Amino acid sequence: DAKTTQPTSMDCAEGRAANLPCNHSTISGNEYVYWYRQIHSQGPQYIIHGLKNNETNEMASLIITEDRKSSTLILPHATLRDTAVYYCIVRGGADGLTFGKGTHLIIQP
Amino acid sequence: AAGVIQSPRHLIKEKRETATLKCYPIPRHDTVYWYQQGPGQDPQFLISFYEKMQSDKGSIPDRFSAQQFSDYHSELNMSSLELGDSALYFCASSLRTGVHTQYFGPGTRLTVL
Image (tube, rainbow over all chains, first blue to last red):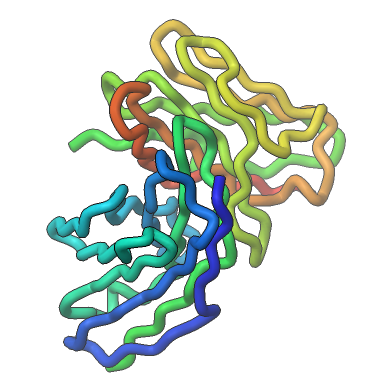
């Protein structure tokens, strides 16, 4: 699976949009971009995934660049409960997930 | 909606003892994954099963073994426990068809004294 690079930490004001970037320059054509988050010691929570097109669900939006070498997860209206470590994972097939260091997102009141 | 169930949620063992963790996947999910997360670490993939067969293998120690049963639940068996095995153990499940999105359980916290 392709390696990803994310900022170590980010701050965002409550109520504002949180934009979390991820670089995955070695992504292969059949690999998806997944985003998970982990709120302190809880099980990782699936957020969203995409292949080429931008995706949106009730939790977030995922913007993937045309060359697929980077993506951005957008939480449109961040709340204090969105404080967590966010993991960007690139994966093809049904293999186990490789978690990198992730981004520690802190939502400020 | 039903989620992944793990039991027990907390477990305390002595060094050199054995432990068995159980995972019940989301109904109709046929693939199970195990992950280990040490203190201050990111989750690390151990092993996965599909249709009772080992599907993928990560950094699972030789002292650990796992299996999947006909009802798709899985058990992680850990022997000769060491202090360093103290960690959160997560199970995830997915459907083999489609995109294979994994959904995680709440985890079992294992403490080895």
